Length: 180
Ligand code: HQG
Image (tube, rainbow, N blue to C red; front, side, top):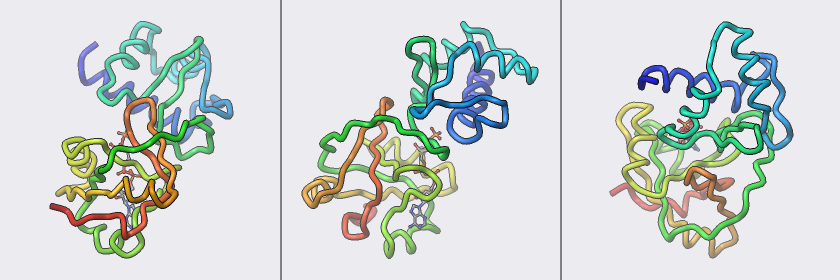
């Protein structure tokens, strides 16, 4: 499958497995899973034909490992706005994590900290390079450095999603170190 089609299928899956399953008439279970067969049929019914092999390729080759397939079912690894319980296990974060954002948001973030906004968690990157990519989605990126060690020490819980994104409920302003 060429890169353009990979991205197209990935975006379509993200939209419906994270945000709007009802739009294609599917239902996610409480942990976000749907049968692969049900999904493929729903896509075909909407004239978006994806073969099982293509779906497997999208899952395997996805640049950010956005999806997981297990026991004939598929789900998005993170990024949901619909209410699902991903069964995340708390994990000890590295001392420092990164958050890429747009410069225009920084003054508010400095006051209120990082909020989950429409998602379930604040998303943090394990390295600066990834954070730059995340921030670039909104224009000129600013990378904030997060004192994860200090947050963990004061009782904040962190989770690591299956694709290596670090998640937490809220990053208080005091844990944001200066962009450098
Ligand atoms: C900002 C993509 C003002 C926050 C990416 C971000 C990531 C605030 C935006 C994943 C704020 C929310 C997540 C505050 C946070 N005041 N702005 N207090 N607190 N913000 O998309 O982290 O391709 O929900 O900085 O690559 O940008 O979907 O979160 O700019 O991994 O797999 O509010 O989504 O991955 O935006 O991105 P988002 P995000 P996928």
